Amino acid sequence: MIPDAVYQEVAAGKGKPGAREMAKADWIVARTVTNEAEVGRLMASERLAAEFDVRYLDCEGGAMTLESLRAAGILDEIFVTVTDVHVEPAEHAAVKGIVSFGAEAGRLIAEGRTAADGGYLFRRWRVNER
Image (cartoon, rainbow, N blue to C red; front, top):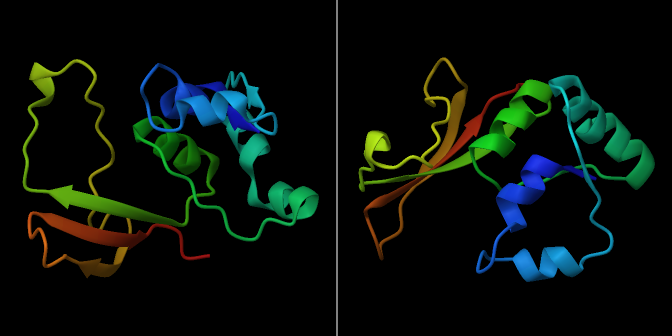
């Protein structure tokens, strides 16, 4: 089960990666979420472990997915890609911001770059010390 907002962010619209595959997947159930507590009930790690034997969950998404997982209290780590390209949010209506990752948001546990393109910095943050 995934919230409708996550489904829309990941798969809605033509030409988005995975849109066709997600539309055909009969195992994906999108549900309307009316409050943050419902996100917790849908995605809580205890329920996933008990009902589906899930021990680790890797989610990919944007600002809406991140905020939903944080609000539900089930976000443990996040992988952030930092680029040297600057986008001015005032010039792009669809740009969404996320929490600034630093000491107040979590603990940096890994960091690296690739030799092929030094303009990208890959960071792994621990945001919940369970």
